[in-house]
Length: 535
Image 1 (cartoon, rainbow, N blue to C red):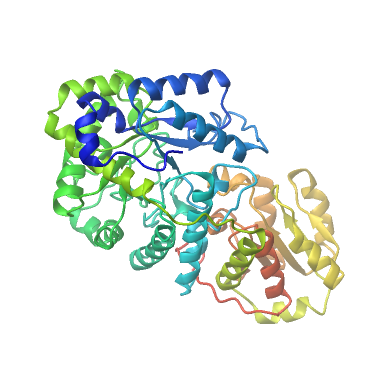
Image 2 (cartoon, rainbow, N blue to C red):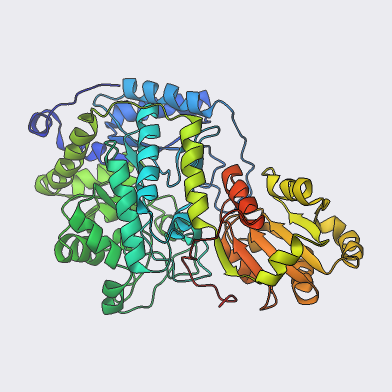
């Protein structure tokens, strides 16, 4: 990787206007791609003077697989492949590329066998302890430096105030604007301490919608005053603290643009609000331009990119038509307008390539220690019957679980420590579990939802949901939920059901959950969102 790049003053005269436009394009790169596609991209980078690239796992990953119909093929060697491709693409570029990745909870969001840190919603359950969030940002930054990545398109600062939001949810720090701001600030400071670039998203706020912008265009019917008071609050505050970039989401907000244009192509929102009213002078980057909220409305190749640029966008992320986009932007804009975006982007490059932070190899032990500390400070008692807890330790109960692909050590620890055999509730075994329930008055359910997103009721079958609801009515039920708290809204639980939120299925979180069950620790976390069915 080149260690230095020309200064802006040097680049200003060396690059032609068309080359400068090429610098503003950020195509998607797929780690597990074919050699043919890799060579095609090498050619494209060289020919078009592409300025940055963003890595995704594969063409079947969430970045392109919106309906979830393509099978994701896992590759144990993705990390090494990533580093190999970074080297190849840098060699293909005439000018050093900025390497980006969307890795909100670490490289593991895109790459197998790499460190994963808790979701933002889990971090939102910390009552204080923002220093732990700083450490998460720092650890992710150190992992990025080691991998050769400059730019993390994170954090999410959307306020998740809609329980039915299909795309933000667990990616948000919560539904309180001040807590979202303070926790995002800690994350940003931790990541910035390593020299890694950041990006606030998704401006002007993607939290209060029930539409997935990968599939359709969300429309938010709120007044400008309401947005400034709530959704825009974290953006306003963090921009004042200093951020490297702001990502604009695919949202239509009539109060901000009467033409109902998506924010991505709205001059009123990008230039009028973000640039002029909020005074943001840094890089503005689009959300992925392949997303159906916008892409399906622009059949002419390059037209979406051209309109986004005309609205005030600087960097065009996941452009599927860079050649046509570069041509339209070059022909349709003044030298001055092109120079404005080029200068902002090149200054960002200068900052990234001047990063002299020493590369630190995070150890497995340090990652475990950090996740353990977060787990111990986030486990949350939503509702709890103290009498039930004490009775469980001295009497028989059904040790039951609903599992995903993670290893369930929590239920195994209960079996070993309390002598209660572990049973798994699966769709095909509902009738057997019903027979078993006749022998017990008390049930401990370890719930590991198969999906973290709400699609298809978090992957839970209706038969399993119905039985859990039935158990909550007929038995004394204690649930430990190792996943997204919004899953509780689909279970139809009795109001008196005891619930402990654990948020993640990591081994560290399971260990802490067992410590809570056995009475070794207290639950000190706080639910960072409101649920429809749990008061």
